[in-house]
Image (cartoon, chains in turn cyan, brown):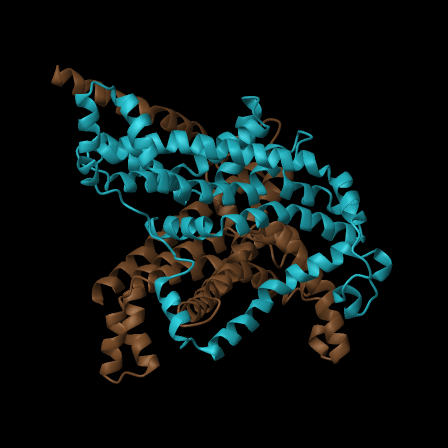
Length: 303
Length: 292
């Protein structure tokens, strides 16, 4: 037991939701009321568009008069008719399913492929020139804008027969590789090599040691990588737009683009659809707020 | 025995890197090279094509539409980067000071970062086309009466507002985590020396925040230069191509406009521009950090 404690397992940078000084502030009550009020007023800029989305989504078209109250007043009744219609028009469950599959598959592939690559590079880049070269080769991909890859990738995925969801998942795995490999290999600097040596003594292979000991130890970095990859892939429009254009499949954001013409001037239907499309990620955010903010901050600071 | 173990370990390391390397070569390096190769052709995206040498690159510099897209993108990225960093720094200072409901407020201000750019664009499009003109009508304010997105001169500001609205969230969080690395003693020392709030910020806080400023500058410039979703949702490049970003132009004309070769050249130049700007920014901010 005491043997194990010796190893220092690094924690990623954390943005504390409830910071120590906040708890102190609450206690001695010296917090600035003026600043608090000012910041609450500022929230209007964030919450107004969302409030508007919600009220319009619940209204019937006849309630939408041309003056400002027509759009912003509360609806006469809260019915779910618009949502049912929006789900039917945009084939909501299908596109939601596609988005979940694409994001989920990308996260799994990223955790597996990027973590072992980051591990191998992190363990060798200071001793072996080859690994250092591979590191810079992959990380330099961060500067390559999608615009330059877009047109060749459309041809290439079509030729390989992966101009579909599988192709999009593979492309995401490549697009997030530079950032994720950098995060993982940076994390390995803080994990002592003694971890593997101890396992070597027990006769475990390097491959086994990685999956049974090192991979579980990288848990804090897995969380960061999963959050960053999930946010990026879930909201992305451009990649599925150009790669999957030939198929009947859409993702949740892409469906909004594709059905824009069908919404016409029925804004209530359109906003019901927007709200449905925003809902999954907002729920995810409310549940995992701490991990998401922490993950984003950690990724950006380390990157 | 031990030696064998070591070489086994090395073999495993190599095996671990191979899948990533294969994927990266196939879907990053090869398309990058093919894109660069197409930029020397008059390929339309279909049919036959010829090599035209540097013709596309020469044409790029005389093409008014390309020039316009660079002008718009840079105007947007410069104004956006400045605004985003100013706003997020102020917001971070506020959210990091002694306030009530700190966690809730931080949660709300971070919200725009998790929402998709396209849908946010559609929501703001409604605000610009209906809500703002209706408010202008009600309050009788002349310049609000028409949609900003319909104005050739000011549509870019509409796109900018949406871009900034979303980007501030991310930079605020980075500045907050930066502010949390500054030890409280620094502020106490400043207070003992009788520094004013502004002096304390300028001479103590800001220098210590410099690494985070450089992270944020590089990050927001890069993101702003690649603006796409907001344009797709708000203006589709209009009116009169006044809000056509480089990414949007490459997508529009390269994919459907029969300019595969020409827009490939545009993309190559765009790539070089992004790399150059990122390097310059990093060199300058690194120097600043050393001086301080």
